[in-house]
Amino acid sequence: MGMTQKMMSMGGSPAQYPKAPKSIGKTSIVYKGKTYRRWKAGYSPEDRKWEKDTGDTFIVCESCGARKGQYHELGCDCEQCPICKKQLLSCGHGGLFGGK
Image 1 (cartoon, helix red, strand yellow):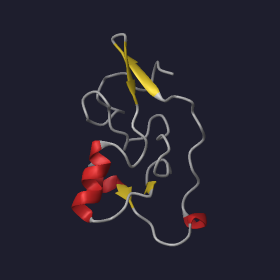
Image 2 (spheres, helix red, strand yellow; image 1 turned 135 degrees about the horizontal axis):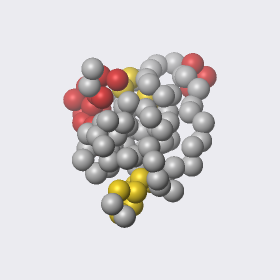
Image 3 (spheres, rainbow, N blue to C red; image 1 turned 30 degrees about the vertical axis):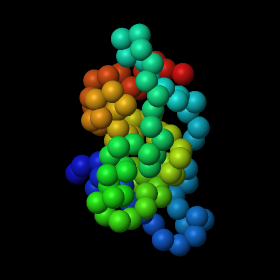
Image 4 (cartoon, rainbow, N blue to C red; image 1 turned 135 degrees about the vertical axis):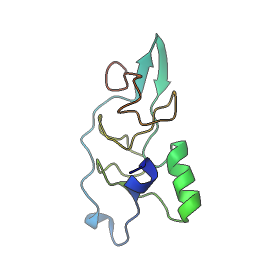
């Protein structure tokens, strides 16, 4: 299942949405001495493409519960790498380690 299939939009009131992830304090990743800012949920190129293709609005990540504008939990399989644009969890850029 691709990242775009993992995203979902939900109707109803915000109280019905899954709980937001705990704040993890990691806003960037460091790879080979260079710092890259992580994308917030709903704002990565993949999320924007999904919105355009489906006509829906990204509201919450199905995997970690991050709402639009929040960072995904570390290890979320939907987060996109800011370096290679692939899945951060498995791309090998060490996004789960190091950073601010």
